[in-house]
Length: 113
Length: 114
Image (cartoon, rainbow over all chains, first blue to last red; front, top):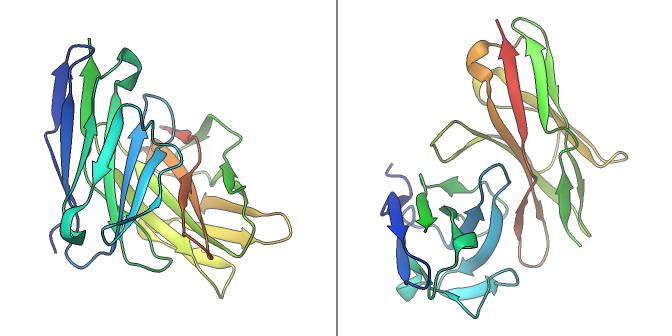
């Protein structure tokens, strides 16, 4: 079974530039998550989708971050404009609709300089 | 509010000794509880989960965890540690009602010494 695919693996941008990350979840998984993991910290939930609807985005900095999940499958997370403090690993995960474990991609390491 | 705490930043244990990594949680409803492991430059790998039933759950690589409702804890254990178990361990909780929001702890670094 294919896992969660994320791209790119690494990205370096200058502050105030924009960047986008892509995620392809495991086939059939209704729930999709985006997490931000800053070095030395636990993953912080940014947004949770159920199919193509947003279930929770309470910790998403909406003035600069946006996310969408078209047709309930792939998802993109965008940052515009980026700040230095956005440097982190962005993890995408997917899971079944009810209380099951989430499966994680390898993440995108973003460095803002 | 839903939360999970891992009180130890780091746990050191000698190879062959038993290990425990602690986790406590807070949810309004019944919890779904999970442990994940993260190796350097890798994503999170699922180890085990508690949904319902037996309080002692067994998972991958010889790990197990005990759900204690009265103490709101879900500690990760292994009878005999291996050097290869050295990694970052995360506890996570989902509230089994509403949004099933998935919240992670801050992580505990396990170091197994040869």
